[in-house]
Image 1 (tube, rainbow, N blue to C red):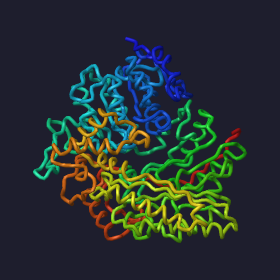
Image 2 (cartoon, rainbow, N blue to C red; image 1 turned 60 degrees about the horizontal axis):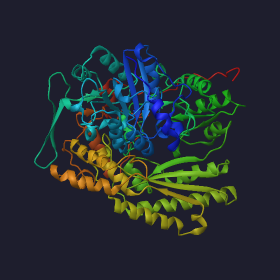
Image 3 (cartoon, helix red, strand yellow; image 1 turned 90 degrees about the horizontal axis):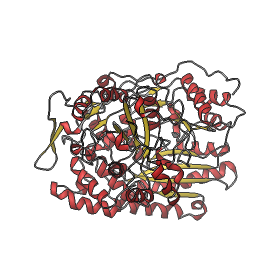
Image 4 (cartoon, rainbow, N blue to C red; image 1 turned 135 degrees about the horizontal axis):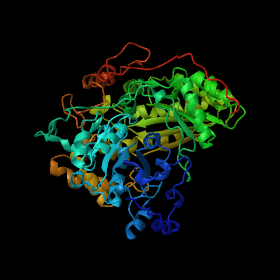
Length: 634
């Protein structure tokens, strides 16, 4: 039976809301299929505003992979802003897709991609507006199967009661396996039982959590037969075989990234101890230079974008990045097509590479991420960049025509002291001095950007005590005063930072267990949403909700955040396998405390983290020796 569009009811409301264009759909390369001509219907949700969610690579890839199957349709939904949400509730309009404006509750599956834990309250808004019961056990055959994915799904326990399943790891192949299950089985019970058998899929209601007398977790055990004791992540090998997205979506409204993005490799083995993305996406898998060239060519033809972002966790680490940059610059010379690397490691930057990237387009600012203020702290986090390396690299950039450099650091890292943070000011002053001396002019800028550190699951810092917000905020103020202490230098330095409070709540959600679900529900019930946005985030609301709910379970906010864990404590995500051995992670945590760095295993013997042998995968890097041939005509 056809599902009617809600647009006739929605359209009259749009003149009354901010940015109505984000709700109308019809983007270039969007896909709309006949509802009755397919067997399985997916709704893909990014639980944030359209402008943030549309450029998301994960959602875009799955949207295309699913819609390529003739028996499947996939549409997209994003969290609506509070102004439209109020009108939708007033006029009884359900959560809708932007493609065909179909009600989200009518789909077979609702796939939710979490880039950050601060999107959890938005999930509840989407479910409630869609008419889907918040609690998974209350849903019937009439409701979609709610499936979480993304990096935050590696510990889905805080939202375990709200989701039916979670996918660990890469989604390209598993989403098709899930589709086959949905096609084969009509009932919710059959679907969930079959999904629990799919590698990489975790069904929380099939596992019971037992707590010890001290409130830690005693065990997590399957409560039915045929369910794996540990769920292993999925890893897509041979990325050239998955050249998605082939036709990227082009937003109608302004979005956070106005460019076409191509993922040039996946995974990272630099071993930065704070970086969950680097740990959970191992091993490194590179696309070939010809595969990248083909994706860029087809993507530009399909979109009309004039900037191509070469994406990965550390793009300059691709074994053939020089050839990639030169090949693409040669290919698009004389056109308006520019290339960009979102962030560059200090030790991977060279002027030849940077000049190739900017040859055909604007020379944008450069971003470097030393992360830690002092050399001692950079040893702790395994981000080995010396101050001299940084000054030399930035000076070279200034000498070659760049005038704006951004330096990114974190505050609240394990073992951090006031002195470590104050060294950031000293480094920024030295950058300005060296830059002025190199170019013989005061016309240079440096921006210092500070983020709050949050310990994440599946990293060596998963045991660490999180720094409290008052300490973070005090250090941020000390740093600001130190930067401005010398006005001659300080006026050339921009200073941007996030206070410690959102990081504290992200810490609660990232390392929480199922008992935190009650806090999320209370915050949402009391009006919490868009917690990743400063204007909507309320620290007081979260603290009050935690104080109301957590003591019932014998724990509190500090128990989840500022408490250091012991080696043998069972962590909430221990039954979810990222491939990393817990013993290896613990040893790396001890190395961090001893200020001992670890090399990149791409170029050294294996450190036995566990990923390759446990998951049957391997590092895939060049050089391949292939070259990009010029295109005629461009």
